[in-house]
Image 1 (cartoon, rainbow, N blue to C red):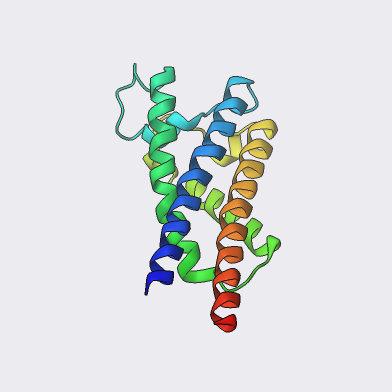
Image 2: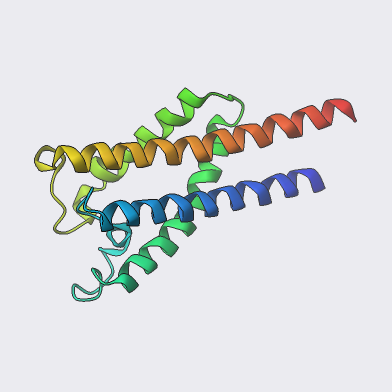
Length: 154
């Protein structure tokens, strides 16, 4: 039971830091004009219009993404932890991109539909989601494989 608890803590930490690291990279991409939407996009449905585009809006978005990423990590743990594949993890990232930019599009006021986004924005965001998915997925699968290996040794 203690090993499962430790594993769950690792999954939560992987999720939090995955969201933190890759939303900071997303903020850097936004600051360098690779994409039109920064991490503040995550708080668009709730934040006031004047506040959301300031650095505080982006910091709030980074924090919110980090917390939301814990849920994403546990979702990956429940569905895909047994397969240690970089391609599966990258596909998970693409799936998340599709969910955020296509299915959840109505939640984000002022966000362009996929068909009118610039090529730079599309490539940047897809790449960010792919590396995020690989970070989350491969890290969780690795921890799962290590836990299984230690169980067999005991």
